[in-house]
Image (cartoon, rainbow, N blue to C red; front, side, top):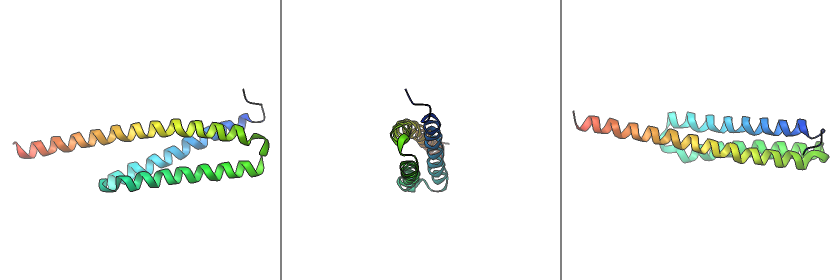
Length: 112
């Protein structure tokens, strides 16, 4: 499917997409611990970091190694969207758990 020259770049794209997703998730998760009301800001900040990492890496590959640019871009964006979906599902699961814990604590305060 990929020429042998493009394989290291494809693996690099997968790794970079994974690392950028981990960085984005860390920003949002740490932000939620600090201040839940700023959830949207943390999500946008995490996505911005992820996008800048992707644009910079694609730009560098496009300028330095033109013959593997298509393979790199395809691999990166496929992984980018898959990892973003997992990130969103994980964040939403964590938020639901926190929301239900908050309701449970409120109910315990009301009814002794």
